[in-house]
Image (tube, rainbow, N blue to C red; front, side, top):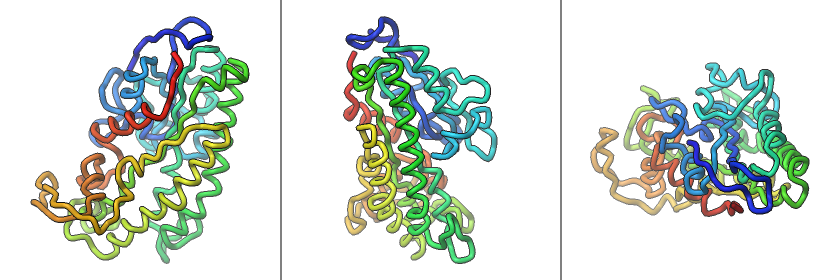
Length: 320
């Protein structure tokens, strides 16, 4: 997505850039679609760039964690163990650079011309927790909620390091006053595990296929996932972004995951081969905005990415 805008008020003349960092959400990945093609309408970054009138430079890498965004060479992006490829509208990344190093270099090379930075990171740190069990410990824990809790301290420390680094790069390029004009916006995720209400999940037989009614264990895990986001993941991310007075977009709340599971609705699940069923409204919403109910896939669909983009648009005040 390439949209040229006027320079930031009081800043250097030229194009104003929007930098995206993070994981597969940051590159608009969808199953059977891959990363968002340049100029495509899907992916929240395309929505934000168009709404704000900014030129997108996307440094995101599918499969990134809060550790890899700081430490791994971007040449690893797209390798099987690191997830789907980088965005096709990627910003320049020199050999050996990490995401944050590449973004820092871009900021230094374009002083006064970066108008917005968004970051989607942390999900891959805790996604494996869904499989935590007595015979399969993850993060040293044998249940999902404890596993997420164990990963929280690393997430907060790494994200705080990441945003501190970016703030330092902005100050070096723009001065303290100029750096304050550039919003750093962090975001979280839809609670896709609510989709376990209508999908067998990775432990199902067959795995990741539409299934209703849900097993008791899947219903429990879906319920626990809401608590994990509300009490652990999102407060941790919000606190980390707050260390640089960054904004935080609670996508979990924005996709209605906190709606009580006792509130149900009739849902046309014919696309899942399940007919019309009565399920919690929060589950119906996650089915509407993501691919989890259909494929057991954690990513948003076009509708979901558009929603996320609009949430960011409402949160970030860009001075142009």
